Amino acid sequence: MSEQYDLVEATIKIIQDRRSIRQYSKEPVSEEHLEMILEAARQAPSGENAQPWRFVVVKDEATRKQLGAIAGGGSGRRFTAEFVTQQMQARFESLEDEAKKKAIFEKLTSGRVSAFLADAPVSIVVCGRKDVWDLPYDTSAAIENILLMVTALGLGACWVIAPCIDIRDEERLKDLLGVPEGIKVVSIIAVGHPTRPHRPRPRLPLHELVYDEKWDVAYYEEEA
Ligand SMILES: Cc1cc2nc3c(=O)[nH]c(=O)nc-3n(C[C@H](O)[C@H](O)[C@H](O)COP(=O)(O)O)c2cc1C
Image 1 (cartoon, rainbow, N blue to C red):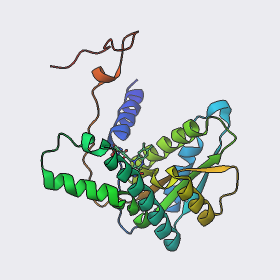
Image 2: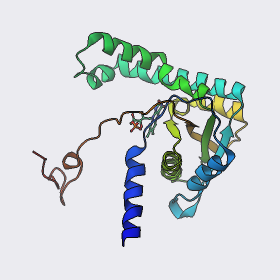
Image 3: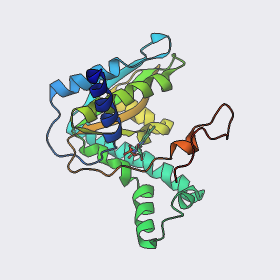
Image 4: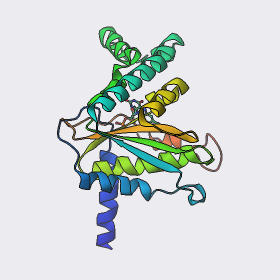
């Protein structure tokens, strides 16, 4: 029983400790750790056990620089669209410090927020078979396994979708990595050694998320 409890505690700790890490030291990720991370991905569930995922491991500096440039471009366009449609302003409505707000908007719309991919020692480019209907769900399960194993190993990672949203960027990635027809590039996971501890981002409370039998009937009471 206590062994089971230790496992539960360790699992919760890994889930809670995971956060998106975007700054890494120059220290490489060991082959042993990389294999453990990819093995965790391989063990993920998939619809009909199709296992449609494929992974391209990128360490080459020139390729990483190009990944960073594509990610920065994609991120910049996405956030510029959010800015133009006022979604970004709504998202940061409660932030009163105007200078800080301006700096955040600049970081987002310039794409700098995702260009860090260039400096990650390893990028795992998550791809998958387009003919498998459940591909987005299957790869998401594999990616979460990657993120949790990374955390358990004391490493840091960030799920980056920015270079895969725009079909033109996806084509650039496919050319860069030699990805064939019929395979989609889903996301890139940057992995490395974190340079500093990161604060957790806020999460909505359970009472706002969970309903009791019917939509909008709170399952949990709001904590006082
Ligand atoms: C589907 C998905 C796509 C994401 N894409 C990006 C991205 O393109 N660039 C980036 O910097 N972070 C990206 N993230 C990381 C999120 O910004 C991050 O998970 C979120 O802000 C919560 O912070 P946390 O992961 O530290 O808890 C992505 C996360 C998910 C789940």
